[in-house]
Length: 137
Image 1 (cartoon, rainbow, N blue to C red):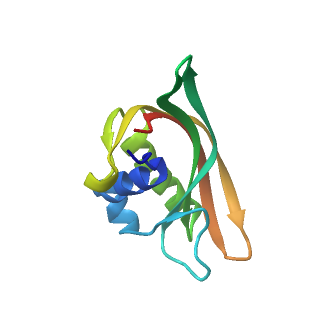
Image 2 (cartoon, one colour; image 1 turned 90 degrees about the vertical axis):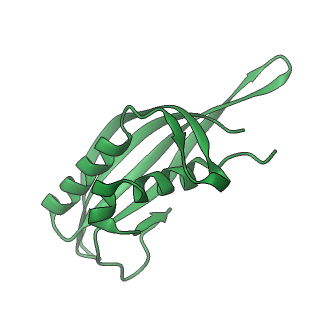
Image 3 (cartoon, one colour; image 1 turned 90 degrees about the horizontal axis):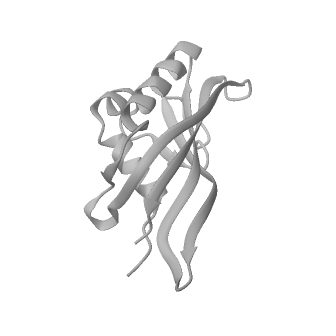
């Protein structure tokens, strides 16, 4: 059985959330914002992760630190997007993702957040770190 991809599951979950989709449509990207993208967007990065083991090997459980960046032309827009994402995933537990990559999530918990300003791209950002506990199998 192939291991599940929490990043893809988070992307599908966010795009499937009405409040988030109303702001970004499907502009949820892995790792970095595509050059020239100007619409409100989300960027998902897996910062770190740790697996769980017992005496017979992997338990199949993992915890990842996921960074979600919310980008907009204005600070208020980035903050509104951050709040929509937080509402959609903070405290969430249950199935997440698509049929092909459904992940059993034990819990999503926001850890910290901060404002950013990208002067080159002329975008404002709100970046949040989440701890995500899930089953890889």
